[in-house]
Image 1 (cartoon, rainbow, N blue to C red):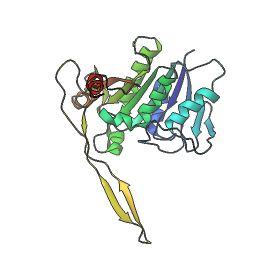
Image 2: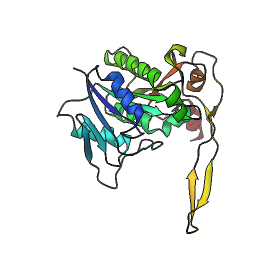
Image 3: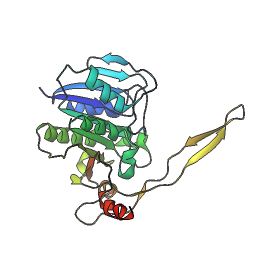
Image 4: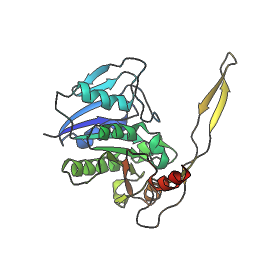
Length: 262
């Protein structure tokens, strides 16, 4: 029987995590290891300055006490699988919100998948795009389309039907639509997002200053033409975006120019 390891960055109580488990629970032996707290935008961070522990929530369901998604994958592989046994697939999500363009580098959801492929395990990250209001999307649309996408991709990956390169994983973003309105899958490239700087200063009752990082609008450079659209444009057009992402951050196109400078 196939073994599937599931995690997320929204925390072990997230409805998206429960929806993902429900979508794939009949495809194999599912083990869930997720952060105890929300760890959105934690990137590919490991916890090195304090000990961590597993807290059993249910059969084959653990939370990592204040750990990150990367901690969850790293420790699960070392502590919860017998010697020589590895999961056949790692699934991360379903994230509450988009992980497209350069936001992939911030995403704990995406970077859990990255951690898996560094250990040689096929992996996929799944995110539910929410536009501006995730609570409204959960209420009106739910995770039905994301579940369908995750299940279909998981089946293909377990069957070896998706030829990913070494240390590459799939990053999937699902439009906020009911399944009947989705236009299908579109293989995409990571888009070019425009960033602002949204931070708010406040003072506590003692007059001490503190800062709260906000959210800036989801804006990007349109790239809907050509062979491969951007993930942003595909989702906007009603497609499920499927982007292969590699662990190697080298700017290969820039190598010749930098070489000439030295």
